[in-house]
Image (cartoon, rainbow, N blue to C red; front, side, top):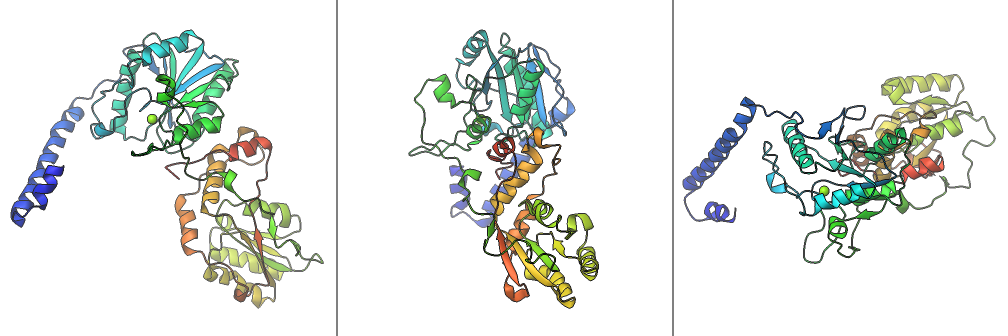
Length: 441
Ligand SMILES: [Mg+2]
């Protein structure tokens, strides 16, 4: 690369440079064609030739591949391993070569170590994130067959998250599947004797780049099992204590009262005074739950654009409610003054007083709650409130980029702040408190 840079950036004529570039590009295209073409012409068979078998993929969209080597038994002790950069060498230089299933052990001692673990009563599982295109996925599956063939006397299970969803580390979906598989065999995993080894550990170094990610360490923290880096586990090197876990964690949230100010009542005092209540805030900050808990029992009409589909329909329903003498809650994000004006103007026409409740949580918390609701709410919570589809990230950045803080001058008589306070069982809180991220967010 350095040589090319010098050549292209040198004092030779523009035409020569152009030809060089074109020539380089043509050569690259030619190489690509000759490399890829035979693969299409002659598909490589992926049928199992050894002890490894792919089972049915797991999950509603089959986004978690699942395979077994030999016949793994469920034991109370689980030895879990990441794949790339932990068991086999990371293949960053070879990412483009989709048709090459070449691989190498991270260290030659790994097969012996696996045999020892198996013989000392551990269930071995391999947990891998792969975000690869269909062609590369085919090669990846071939590579797995080859790796398994080199472990022909060690039973293990393999789980591969192929989408950016609930199965992708640090999301705990694969562990949940493991627990269920073991439960079906009447085995309860002993988390204290189990462990996970991975290279995405968030390690910081002096004089060299930090680990590319910390998702393996976060996965072990989410599950609550001991974590080791490959160096610590396979090479018995001292614990690498300098690491950072970037991203959002609920443990950093300030402890705030639900409402500010606390001096004025949540519902009008005396009760029954007609009003319009407007909610403002990111999606997934508990606006609808807040309505259900506090305003629905007091007979407020619920106006929500997810249900009513258009703003016109929302304004119309609100007018009807107010004309009938009822109070209404506008349970939308209501991000700026021009959107709020539609409702404020209509309420003013009918001489109805307007209060605003601002849900103060920031984008990181809102996105976290979104991932929790869509992916990580424990099964025990499902009967009360079904899992929701994940809200796209654009809905959150759209709010952030267009937000205007509500002001009394918009025609609002009072603005109250609603702070996020988690409401749920201990089990739900444990799941909500995990490191949740999909696609780096
Ligand atoms: Mg890795």
